[in-house]
Image (tube, rainbow, N blue to C red; front, side, top):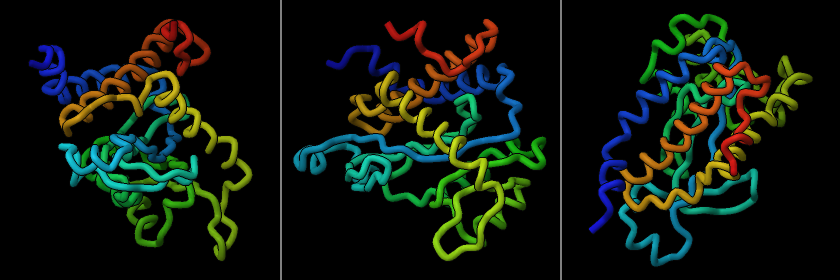
Length: 226
């Protein structure tokens, strides 16, 4: 039989979510008025046989990661975070889910996140575009900064965008390089959700601890990476 730990872990997703939010709201970074949004692959299998017999089939999908120029089978972690890397909101979807729809769903699910944040700035990549999409963000009180797409008029904030865009890539690399996001070993939807949330909680706990300890760099896992 499976170890009792795995059974308890699969049932703990809501507990992990609550503890993550408690720690996040206890940090100085929670009040930041600039957020970054992006999605990153969460691979769930490589062989054709795994895809055919996996309990994740139907949720996990084939998708393409432009950052690494590769196809993968699995999910996407959509993450809204502060410039220090503190997770604010997140979702797991199929690999082909629309990033814009997922972001709007995140804000619709937690309207209190923006209720006291008029003029919140959100930085995204070229995939976060569209008149209707940006209009809905404005209704939430969000100012969107993203690169200018081909054929568009030059958008404001372009000179500030590039260095800040690298932050989200660095945060994703923390999840994958130090927290082994793509080595989660989950085999069922509940198992994958819990294991991904473990990583989000771990990063949040590190930022909370470094913030309480007065460390200059909040997203530093060096002390825990041995």
